Image (cartoon, rainbow, N blue to C red; front, side, top):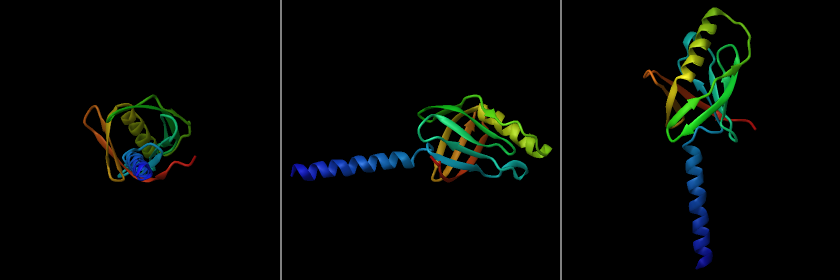
Length: 132
């Protein structure tokens, strides 16, 4: 009987951990839907540390984030310094400014929705897991 209870407890613990991973953006990569000027904007979250990274239209960017419940904030982004076409540079600048104003997030299936302090939102679609 105790072996059955131990097995059942193990299965329940595994199911709880799996459920938490599915309800988290940690360790996943996303692509911005409806990006301006057909820009390629991606956002990934390290699976081991509170670090974010991605491509912001022209340049690669990275930084640290803070997560408390559904409250999410991004620290200052570091980025490469390449120049590109003006429409993509504008999209990049607006995106990085948006990240600095993010206050919370919401997951809907494979969609990550970021909410800024001014009420603006951006929606990202999951593209896969972070390569480690």
